[in-house]
Length: 203
Length: 100
Image 1 (cartoon, one colour):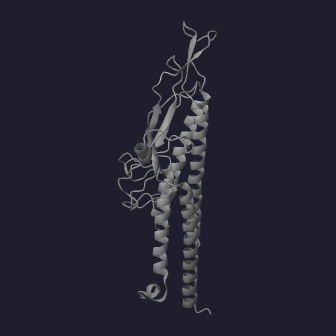
Image 2 (cartoon, helix red, strand yellow):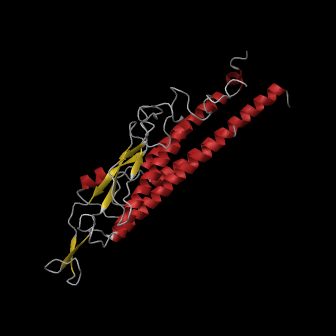
């Protein structure tokens, strides 16, 4: 049996030890993917807000609280990338770092939003520290909500007012459009990077 | 050994460097586009709130349209450079094999 074909042989596509996990050419894909993921989470949160726009009984008994995704520039320590390092035992393998979770909209299954994080320890960093974007957390509206006079509503108070979530569906729709367009822009970047990689294979 | 054969007879090294630069620029575009909504949480069509200084400070420096144009430009440059490099290697291969 020729050397290198045994079961202990390292898979071809795995990074060599002490080599960057992310090859420089693939970093563009990772950055675009971080943007896609961030915009997708924005869209999910907006969908959550629109779906709960009239909910007067949230998990805490009060009206639903509007949520907003907080984005931040990723750093070497928390950059998003899809693949863990097979050689790095210092936490890179456990790439899912749970962030502040929140329940699904009145669903039976509580859902936790997770941000995949790969600590890169400066490996493969671009010259300008380009690590894309990440979701820092999901902020919750601290307002009490708007009061609407509906004496016949089962959740009306003694004065006949019902407290509704402070959600403007028009604003949410505009935010949704914004997230959609930026998602498309990131997808275009991803496709371009892929096309460039494919072209480099033809050299 | 034919040290320096490729460097002396072709422009492959320069083309390689051009491809690397192209990738770097493309990575920069990807980074800026991914961060396009960092300071734009109110959405592009909503009226800006706060004082003029606050609005200016909160203004998103990323122009997605410009970035898309730069991306298309960079892609074309990369493809052209890759094609040139491909031809360079093909002609070098032909010269080694003695093909006309």
